Amino acid sequence: MKKITITIAMAVLCLNFSLYAQEKAPTKTYQIGDKVPDIQLENILNHTTHQAKISDFKNKAILLDFWATWCGSCIKSFPKIDSLQKQFPKNLQVLLIDNSSRDNLEKIKTFLAKFKTEYPSFSLPLVTGNAATNTLYHSGSLPHYIWIGYDRKIKAITGPGEITHTNIERLVAGLPLDLPLKEGYHEQ
Image (cartoon, rainbow, N blue to C red; front, side):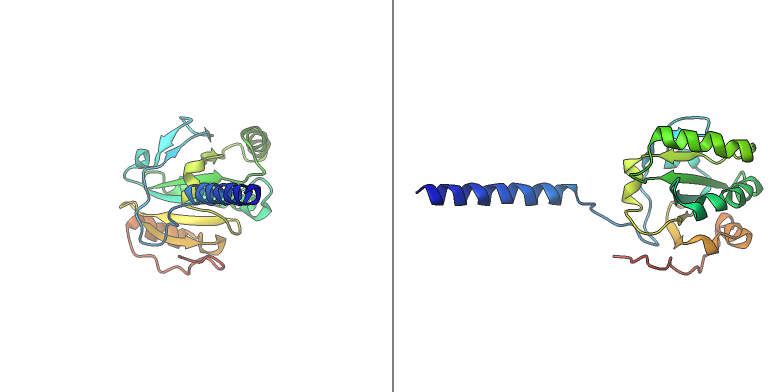
């Protein structure tokens, strides 16, 4: 009898663990053509507000740049991307998003202060530690870019090689983007 009770208890315990794991799993990986939900962005640095929603950037195409403080190639591209933002201020909003578990708000604030000593006119908003953006990007290599059109649909998912004036110009003009899917990114 004791052996049966222990076995039943273990089965119930295992069932609870598997149900919990299923509840926490992301329900969707967004792909090219999907509409981006109106997610709440919190902990925004280098911006007029500390919170925003995707819809707050209405009438603009959006480029989400996923990065981390430990990603040298991400940081190296910031001046170029900041320059592109300044070339298209009315039609484009670049958002730098750090979802790295190795970074926190204080670490990113320190990084930003140091970076702005070298690039004082740097004006891109940095979104930090935001669980809502994890629905758009779960894992993989950095940098990682999600291109969003005026209709809030994902137009491309790329690496850094596609970040060019011509491609940004096409995005803000509402033209189709025929960009290669980021190497190593798998749509589900």
